[in-house]
Length: 338
Image 1: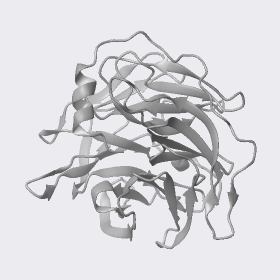
Image 2: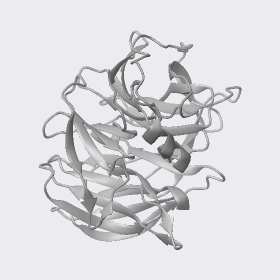
Image 3: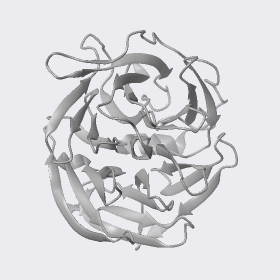
């Protein structure tokens, strides 16, 4: 996801607010399941509204949907000001939500559960750190902060390997016409940090493929998906541009992979997702109803582990919403946040 420079400045200066929004904020949930249109388009249906535009930042931006073991869905609000709910827990059956975490300065862009310790990990884009919490949102800890090879990270999305090591998109932008984005590997202890790839164009989404042999990386400012082949130790053995996304004014945001290896590419600047197979063929496009106004970006998706119902975060001047659709294959941990 992209955070405007003006917003980062706003987040740094906003004062502490009373915690609000802890109760239910729900819109029209929609009763019909998502379906595939005659033209091959996947039609998403509105589930509920989660947030409204914040006065302090002039925005709301939902990200990082991820399922807990009990079936509840966690979602972050990137632009929530100090004291307002920054991490929400959604009860999909009851269509309710409640705040579970806030703080004074963080701008959280993704959420993912670790297979190692079971804690929930959040990337703090503004503060250049990774925070972990207990599954109920309590016990916040800073897992990693500080420079990586002399430069502070702008951590955006996370993918965990099977041992619990973190692979993070460092979404640094351009300077002097050079791309400075990186993929950073942090071992599960938080002590060993390795730059796996650099010179990337604002890398955003990051997800392992279906057999953990490589990473899919979406480069936001080039509208392309790159592939990093990995060996058994997690080192990069190959790198190439895999898919070029025709997004127009929209840009490639977060990415997820289903059990069949299909890629779900979110679009920042358009409330839609492109769906591709691992060979780059575009299989479908996930669209929200054309009559919907005030929603401008689809940032991320979580597919129900072991099921095909997908939940997509969509935001804009109308607020922050969850939409659902039928994925092409079952969800796994790689379909669940990041």
